[in-house]
Length: 362
Image 1: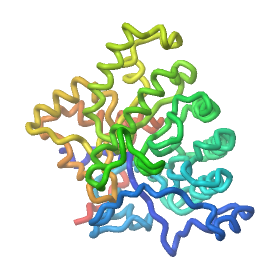
Image 2: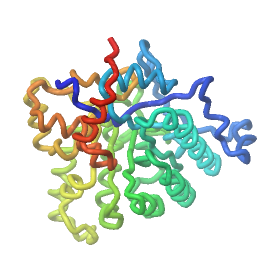
Image 3: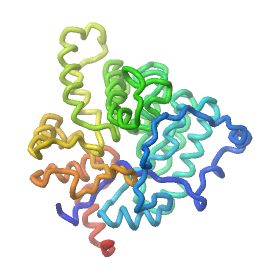
Image 4: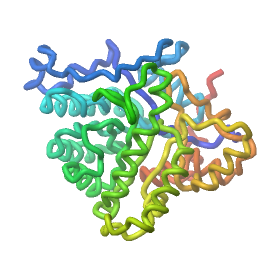
């Protein structure tokens, strides 16, 4: 791998600390509600028995994370996945929206203001579509806020028309919606029933996101809101082939049920849906992964992610087959995400980083 190739990491998990707590950003009117516990939410019920974070590194300090992660791997931009992405499952709807607002201000103040390489994700409360649309429009004014983030789990599938105000606000600002695991199982069940272990739950995460993708496609979100895109983060990739083929096959016989769809479902997927690479399914032979990339048009649909600082972190030089072409490597590691988020070209960023290069961390 070319050590000078700039990367875009689409999945970084910042965390609060004593030095940069979230609580001061809570709107004054909701601080008493927080003290009374009204910010309570169902937990996912599944905890990694060994801990979710790597034990050799921290991600609660933007300067330290910049040195040990961004600098180490030549990462030009890192997309933050705020802890507030679970605001949608807060029991009190108004408090959930206030929490989302607070996490957005925390993210901007304690990370994005410190290092411009950090790009933000707007937290919203999906159960409060009108307030969520207002929050999207507020945060979209801030340079560097590049997407909206929600969990895969929801009370209703995301194609439901009650969510249209959210999609409309995203369409207005050309903001992608990123689905990230964080609440799967929170409403008492996972797809097909409730798993008994973290191992089962973690392996079944793609099922939740598959259901959401099918809903968004079939309910015509990309026809109604054509400037929006969907990012499916940390939920695998290979399952897309089965989903896409099944949707296209059924569309030929059942399209009368969705007269608003003008194209094959796969065409909407290739134009509007992007996936992050971590965690990629690991094939027995490297060439099988390359075949999967060809089938799924990875040169358009796949964006690199590390999931820093979690236990299943992907180190850039080890995440992909060594025989991958230079063209595909550039597309996955930089260009797909740059196009998705409206960032400078690979050539511009390469030149800028070369002029300001810091010594690599040993």
